[in-house]
Length: 331
Image (cartoon, rainbow, N blue to C red; front, side, top):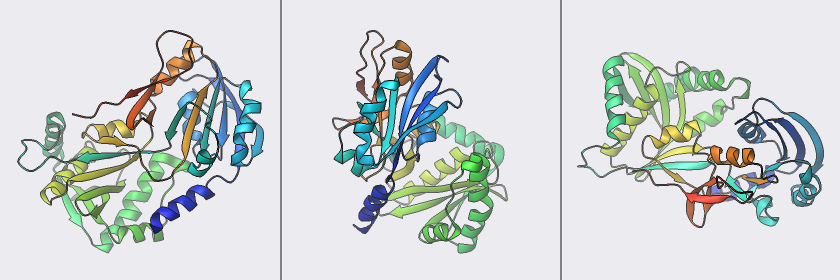
């Protein structure tokens, strides 16, 4: 209960002020000119803008307002652009009217339901064969540790350097204190290549469930096949210990997102989280085919009438109204 309240308070505080910006640049799919309005506190601006534009668009600040004033502010400035993209904390989106027909969480979750013991294969045949090949080639093996010293090394030599190498100046890492607090109740999965520790991941167990936590590697990109091998060996070890559910963590709400696609190789199901979080809303104000094709190509994911759906537009016709197509469950 306290965790839920904390999430609500964090969500409430996350968007005290909203900025409304006019963006102009080139559409990422065909290079034609496109104009958009971004409205929000900037937390996810880079992601939203990156889904639309090829390169960095020009940016003009139109207004700054309280979140509850966003609907009236966008009614004033929205006609200046072909697309309106906004992000709002869950409370603000609940209190005000919708800002776009397409509405999705900033993050979705993926879960893997393990087969019962006795099944011929725990994961897909192709994935298991590839992992077996990587193990033979690189001598990979899994070790599990609860030692605080190993967690310290993981933080200093794997987790922080890997994220900074991968994301550069935009890297967001946990502080040492926060990391050690989380790690104190966690297990560390270590992937070795021979005698060399090459990658690792924190694991959080709850009853018959296991959640994959922070990942780190000696190098960026990780050693060939290291991520897949670490995940597969961890899943197999978990299954042998009675675990039936694996939480793969969060991904961006798009079927073409690289992280989401990676997790789908394992047969992970998409779940729309129930906890409060930032909501994205998109409204097409122009019906030209290039914009409809762009939105269809992004394969955005949202909850629709109790199902997980992706957003598409009809191939023909002038309508700016999207269709919501259920996402098939993994086999």
